[in-house]
Length: 596
Image (cartoon, rainbow, N blue to C red):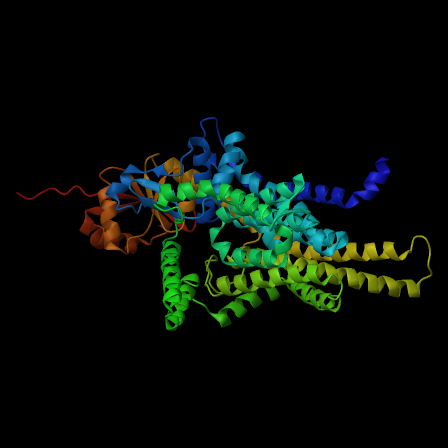
């Protein structure tokens, strides 16, 4: 009985084991570099980017207090500049800039468990995503393809990388959307209806459960990355058009009810933080929402009045606001080459070959394949040209194309969508070579075609996994091995600076806000701006103020003390050289003795 069940469910057993290994492996970076140092709550839980830092700090704060705004009364003396990147300040409060979904979801989980689980929630959801990816791909391409596709996903560099760096939104968004797509697909599969007059009503508990789950998880995905509505809406519209008769009325109503239920908390906090249910922390996006809404109203007016000559102008306004960073076809193609073709050739070229083989087979089960293809092409084109038109410099060296640049996380759905075609190529190639091998050697029980095919597929997957794991660990200067080394160095800097500064002090810095916040108040700045220098002068009346940046030569310190800082009655004094590159300085107020 046990053996027969193992034989029947061996793919599922393998996936569960792989998912557990994946969770442990991707949790290791945070487990090995983050420390809860003592019983007083002092901890070193730091992140490599401002976005991750803000997400973690506000998630932890929300779990502990139920609030999403952190009070900072001293900003009234600092013109609201006292905050790290990815955080905005207003009315004496620090507020998150980014989308709120990850903060609300992880915050609620941390409230039930403990805030110490927060760094490991993305690895948990990502491991769950491997299983759901298998279930979803199986519907369209079968069990074998789904298993191979899931194994490719398990070691795919951006999926592993942004799971390990667990406070980015993208992997959580991808998994939630994947779950929504899976239940949305089940919602239309083998649908049964009962006709009442001109309406179709769903029958059976599954027909009610699936739209509930699809709407719920889609709503959660939208809260995590609201900007992705740009391609989510057309993709789901295509899926609905292809299955309009199977969905009916009741399923659609249930779907939207649970979608609204999922996004309602996000809308509430948007209104509380930003003054509108539809506004977020990005001013550019808020402005675009207002402009698009106005353009939509004008579109209705000109249509009703017959002034069709205004269409071109209105559509131009909508286009400019959607592509508010511009539309650049050549740059998009160049970024696609850099961050897909050149970065992951072992995925792109087999995927392209598999797509060619797939088209040769398109006559069978045509509709099922066409639905997948249309949806994939839609999201692919939009994502490539929307994000490809932007210029990201997450890596300090703008000439480097590395996994740490934002394209790799924004294009995660584009990468994952081609995995079934990579698997399709693997299956076809393994079958071809197994047939050739059997022609060379004599047939026997051991050298049966299915066994040879399986061994060839396993060998190819091992090769793919080796290339992927090598890349994500040491493939660039932002590989996970180097990230771990950077965390060790950051811990040394953090310990020394924390020991040398008071608990209520302000640290002016350009790069290290993510390291010292929230244990210390931080300002992003230097001494090049006279207005900022005056703000530092104001703050010295109330708080200790420090400067932490690259080592300054003696003549630069003398210049600052004799010219720029002296104008604001300030002087800078070296406290300690922390390492070869960075030094901690104290910014002091000069006591001026008046002349009588």
